[in-house]
Structures are given as C-alpha cells and as structure tokens.
View 1 (cartoon, one colour):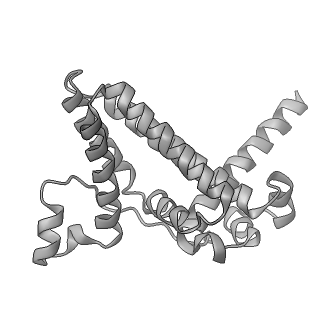
View 2 (cartoon, rainbow, N blue to C red):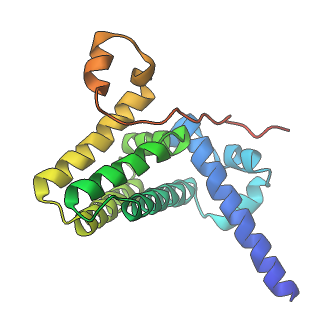
Length: 196
C-alpha cells in the first residue's frame, strides 16, 4: 500500500510541475524561463524537477503535449454537444469549445510561444505532432472537406491573434472588422508566480 501512495504522490507532483510549466513558459517563453522558475511556481525543489525532466526542452515539450491533449479533449467535448452530425454542426461545436478553452491565456500563449521556439528540433517536432493530431481528429470526426478543415484551423489561428491583442475588447474599426462573427470567451489570466 505505501508504494502505491508514493506512486500517486509522484504522479501528482509531476502533474503539478507540468501545470506550472504551462503557466511559467506561457508568461516568460521558452528561452527566458528556467527549471528553477518552474520549480518555484510549483512549490517543488529544482532538483526534484530535474529528476522528473532531463532538460528544460523536455519539460517544455511535455507542457506543450499537455496543452494539445487539453485541446483535443475540448474538441471531443464540443463534438459530443453538436446539434447534429453534419460537418458544419460538428465544426461549429468544436470551434465553440476551442474558443472557451483558449480563454485560458496560459494555454493560448504557450502555443504562441512554442511557435517562437521552433528552432529547437524537439519543440518543432512536438508542434508538428500536435498540429497533425488535432487536424486529423477534426477531419475524421467532422468528415468535412479539405477547404472546411483549412478554414477551421485558420480561424483558430485568427482567434489566437485576436485574443492576445485584446481585439475583442477594442472599439476600433479594424478590430470590429476582424472580430465580427467570431466567438470568444472572456480571458482567464493567471499570475506568473505562485502566491506564498
């Protein structure tokens, strides 16, 4: 029995570190954030984090994989709530679920920061694998044609841009033009450091 409790504690700590990595890398980016920064946010020693993850790159890619896992889960949930099984209804429902998910700015900005760090081969491969997984899921679940899938993914990227620039809260004509008809949720902002 104690061994399973230890395993559970180790899994809990690993999950805590990954969640802290998402938040910390979202706020500081791959190049500026250190393992010590993630450890401080998680309330765990840097040595323990280094025991779980062999490098900062591995920690970042694990956080990014968790981000893509959450995206896919949100899309699955959206698809389950679609009004019917038509490609249009499924894409609409999945798009709404994604818009709600990226109200969590950490998940959104981690994706943006990952694109800025793609000179690192492991990060580039993780981004490609995540994009492939999401695209494949959307295509297979919706059974939409190529142009519809392309538009769905393009709108997702536009939502990123509009959310990070606060365009939904801007009265300017350019913002109104770009945001018209696009769903979004109010942003959830997280503090970069854990409160002590």
